[in-house]
Length: 555
Picture 1: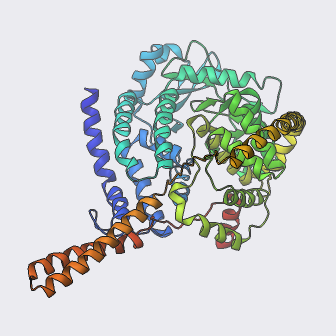
Picture 2: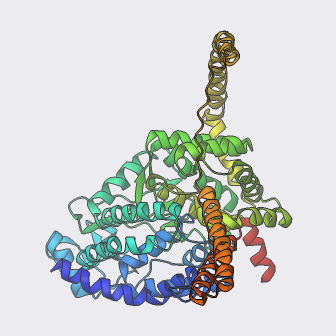
Picture 3: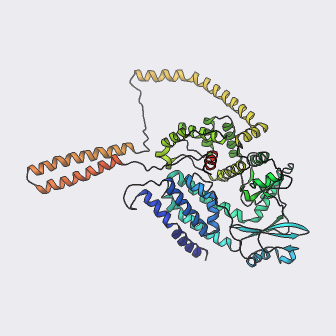
């Protein structure tokens, strides 16, 4: 039954995405089966992104969650798509109460017996669940209920996504194909975990325990005995939405300090604790009357292993020191940057990104120069995102957006630098550098002793004509293959011209015509070999603050 439903969903999804797939196919070959590649300009990309957004909404809960995840994956989608999808909020009308009541009563028993009072109109609705207010044991509580029938729909859609991967990978380069496969695995794991409310309760308790001694944060208590796999009952904690700037100003909240406190909380979760709240959009964060930050919805939460924690620290320390070489090393070691990347270009990109992140003006001529240098290889651009870092990136980008909303001059690098210094990470980094330098000096001294005898032996063999050198040539771009084809086409063309002339002189027209036709084909192939080039795409690096300033200018 599940597989039959998946087949039906596959047909529906394919039909919904068919116009986009045809457009992408025509980008590769203008007339599908033949023709030159064509370039999609930024306006066309944005128009397609709007179509994609509408399609995701039309396909229901699973694809709404997929769209949210895609909005934080610049390694999968071009900037125009990321920009459009970043506005996607997981807000959908809640299911009817009677259907939700069945879920509650299957999980906990009769509603009237388990709760003193239960408001049957949901206070919020999302793609996977909906929240109701109630009272239990004299306390105000929030009851999160899994959307009725969503499990079967999600499993069918996950099959559809897995079946669609081979088709989608035909439209992207190797780097994005790598990220797409990771995205599918990560999405399946994340959405199943998000539907398991027992796991959510455990993650909430674990994260809250790490902030037990910090009174700047509030984590709702889980109500035992009224929670299960499909229903989660928590203490109801009210507050002002964290991006309600006017409301916070009315209450005299220091928004700059609030932004710094939020950033430090997530630095602690990721770098220190290794377990973090992974969905910090404004709907899941609020501020109490006394200025404390409240965290809601721990369905999307994750863990960071010690190795990745170490690389994140290395990354932040390098950014704080404006050491782009060290930043690149950290990205390569974490698996987010290909070791074959052009370090000169990437260093310039990172310099501009750091400059923009600190609120400094970005020089447009430098941006355009970098774009010109990477334009021909944008599909092979060396960034990729392993699945163990995807949620961390999502958190970093969303939290920075919230902090910049609270304080347009917020400098997350300064906050991260202060945090790392207070925790002793920068001093530890210096000690590690000195230790490694001493080891390198010792290794260099040993090598200095070993090299002269080896050099003398090599010179002796050279003097005796007994020195051989073996060299292997790598040609990932197939330059030698292309050159060989051109030489062959040239020989064929020359032979065809001579043969055609002889046929004409000897009055054998059939030989002259055949040789002429062969010569024509060789000429076409030779021309195409010189004209062929890789498909390019115009793109601009996205810098958060620069875009913010531009939008303000437009307003």
